[in-house]
Length: 215
Image (cartoon, rainbow, N blue to C red; front, side, top):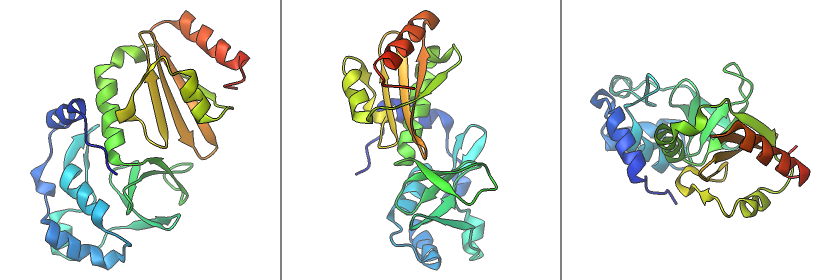
């Protein structure tokens, strides 16, 4: 089930703006998608309707262009874990089930790993960090997680859990000092620490190491 975007994320998208030149009639696109023999085209169509043409980080997010569809030209696709992947920018690939993947070990690799359950999580995180940018004035620090991620959730139960920015690949918490972001990579979970205080962050990291929660 896809989460609805928060008001913060909706305002973020509105500020970014979308280019109408990437709009494609969804019925025409659905017929074009038959060329790729997808198991289900719903998520690709939903992405096209919601995000195609979005300007973010000096790049226009899109899979297809109207000209390419009109000329019946295909786009490059990739295959990973039973899913067909389409490029949506220089870094991200959307799978037919809606998950967002990255190339593993650089742009020349044909190995991928899934990084977001949906593109919405990425948008939520971008909108969140724009609003709470003061947490990331200090250089970020990351440590390998050596306990179960659910135990970490219990440990930080007195923090605010940022549900809209979290999915099965991400967990985020904050309080008035710290912002914690656990990310799942192929090698396991890594937790990143941002903080308003270098001393307090150091204390938190040492506490977690002492309790054998992080390496």
